[in-house]
Length: 196
Image (cartoon, rainbow, N blue to C red; front, side, top):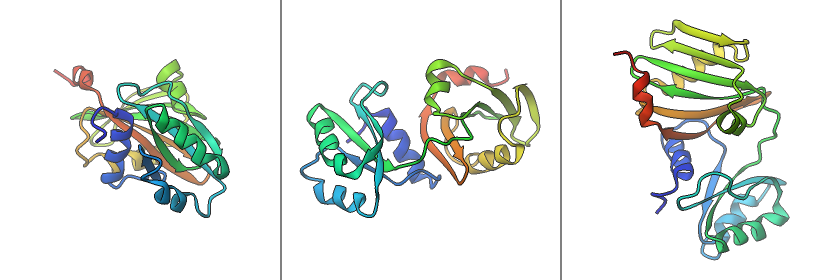
């Protein structure tokens, strides 16, 4: 159903692999999924709503802190305009750091920025720290300031190293009392970063 929705596919892929992600509901038919939406909104004050249209993954409408009394009408509007709604638990924008990890055959490349959201790193190239870590856990290269604690680097690597995500970029962020992966996408050009 969502073959041409890379953002949604990336979320589903992470969830299916058991990685920590915010609770998520994908809505592409407001009327058919109304009860599902109501059940999701129950006991919440806010939700985070992003969207994706077939063939359009970036610059899509969103409401990062949506009061639940506005959620239904916003979801309906998105669906009417051809967008699938991505409804998630509201996560405060108090990121300590945000970043990407690229899974290669022999190593991991991690790029991190202070704060967030990770879209600033991906769209604007805001990188505060760059690491390349071998599969054995040794630091191959390190540039920039020390944004991400080495224990967190080890935890992130331990969660993804044995998963079928070779040549995938996985987005993540951490707050004072939370850590989530947001999206996984294949990057076929990353094979060029492998040693010859």
